[in-house]
Length: 111
Image (cartoon, rainbow, N blue to C red; front, side, top):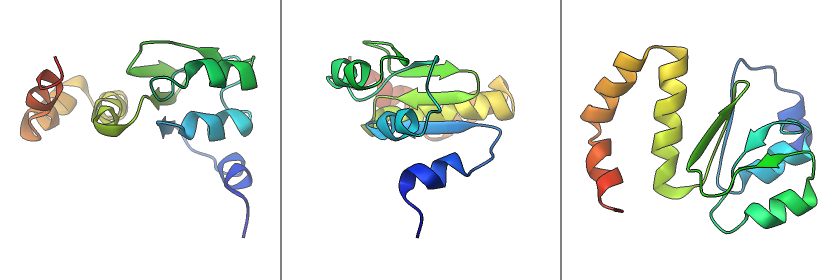
């Protein structure tokens, strides 16, 4: 069975996404080199130190860069999924799904 790194490297996809510490796997696979990315809140310094070619964004819930989406984790994965949906379908459809799953209510709960 291939390692996670080899599995990710062997994939050909239009888009790639990671949630939480998944940015480390994408970095290790060479996918985030030269790209802007985020990871779990509090893990940004470690990611930047381990992978200096990654342009780590601090205090960003979601970063979209060259068809690669990274997000902080937890419930913020919904935000990343909606961003991806907007890119691959339409902003209107993503907003419709956001309303259907009551994402605004979830997002507002953390304010």
